[in-house]
Image (cartoon, rainbow, N blue to C red; front, side, top):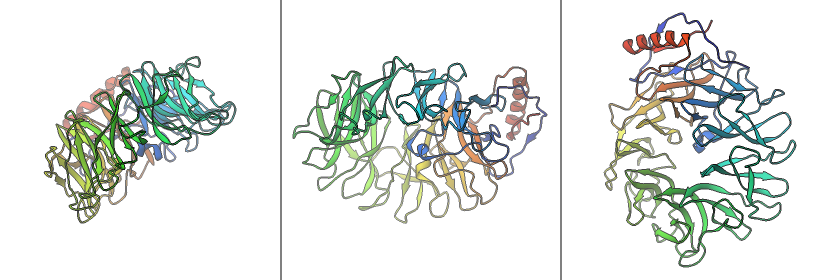
Length: 490
């Protein structure tokens, strides 16, 4: 287990040899000197990143020996990056799916030596990190999956031997962690999913045995019920729930118009628009930009493209690949100075970065980054008014890039793994915390380790006692020279 330490620093400022932007990334810490210290997994592509902000710090999973994956925290400096607690002394605790509980704690799931994958909480300190409750007692897993917050509680799904996979809530204490309702009584699963908060309720998808639809709760068993029917009867489906203007928007099917865009406030349920009169529009990938709700949909004519609505007027925005083709895959839409930046696919099948001001059919490609697919569409993340993504220019491999929505401002952060080698995976989970964007990367020497870059393009200014003064001096030199800096521990 590593603990916080003050490290004497012998000052060398390294000048970057590859292409660099005004934002120069740096390796935060070589967590595992013998190999990979961090790695991404399936959950990065679901938007969880490979960690979460906690105040101005960053909490993540890491391993200092390549096998024992434990809970770590970083303030962006080497001395300020360390293991919080060895949750499972006899093996790997594999903490993941971090979710904020208020402003000063995170819920997550992990394995200890006496319980399976269960509910934990941390405030970033050893004393504030503990097992909340062994929901599925013994070695069995409850496998919590978050969630949405309403009041002081986070709502999530968990699995127990008696109730199956059902809706739970927790305030981070054992006494405050309870089953909300066994929606599908007995061991069958209702599998709550797509949780979101609106109109003083938590809305979610569930199946009580009669079919999948949207449910809602205010935290009690009696008020956990399906949403009201639509004009033609129950609305099934309920995937991709998202909050906009204090209403829950979702993909639903009333048995008349196919799978379309619906909304509910818990008292009425209405269809926003029958986008594809001849079939299913399959709405997904919601984002609020400029006060409007943007999303993907297929109207049967223009293929899967970007749409937007104010809740009343709904219109198509893009036609990146003209005709009934997929111009945009499931993607993150980013607000960059009021413009919408996204990954699009043109008529040649090339995936690049595009931008629109929301006016119909005025989208433009920002930059042809490389031959073929220059952008990994699952990698896009928004931070500090910019877009961070994985790009490949055909020369330097898969590397981290940043864009401000302009050609001149769309650049590689650096060629971290020099030459044609890849430094980042398809979905590295760029995550902002404390003015830094964290991501896992490999430089070809140290394995996959935590890296970061300052959102504003400047160097981070840590505060870790006397060592922090040395860091500050090096940071000022690095900023003046426009170079890469890092410390070497004694």
